[in-house]
Length: 338
Image: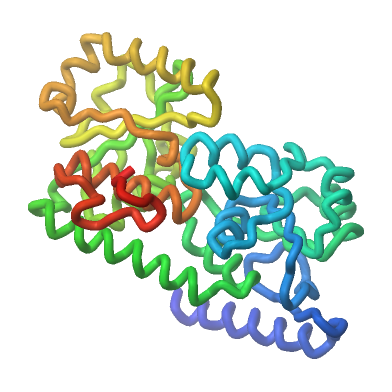
């Protein structure tokens, strides 16, 4: 029944797209772009956009990978990528920061021929479409990272390149699985500590998807289905716990991360991490006593292929106990596993 319903929805979407495509004629040099993730009707976009403003991380990443960085990007991306992926520094330096929320005057000054964003407000869309063709789409949760990446790849004409990147991602995971005895029985706990709050990363979070793709198990406290997680924590991405509940963070391995987008944020997270480490409750955890609790970088936040390979590097290092550069190098980092 569910398959029949999905098939019907797909056929209906395809039919409507075809009808709209037939009713919409784009100017020379433009093509019609339609996708089920769009929040608008299909949009006429340049066949070969040259000056793209990225208001989402997937367009930001893929344009950098294509060798044509966006001319501008929403403000929250620069500090996250600069801090977590220093090897992108030269490309990031070429990208104008248009602020967050994005400053319309800054975008106009860049003379873009395409604007790409996710979850752009109706008010912002009203103004952006006056500047350049604008794509606004639903990216989904942080764990749904491959879907929007493939959509943006289709938008930018980079589908073959992205499919190759995902194949490379899978190949590294396959290598990792050969180096770990019985990955499903190895419980990997993922914990976010930014301030005084402690959050368990659940099934729909970005790092949880990488851990799952690697074939590892999760502690019972983090292995809920999306529905169960929402019922227990009101979210399928993360559930907050107190220090007194820290036993819920235990596992065969614990990976602790924070959003390290600035030195100030890092210092706050570092103070919280030190506080937790000094607690007898933390010290009583099995992973702690076995020296298998590791603090890792902010790339565990997400959102795309750079972060995914960074997480894989950590799994190679701390679980397989090998230098990834020697067995399955990160394709974006020369001569280093991280």
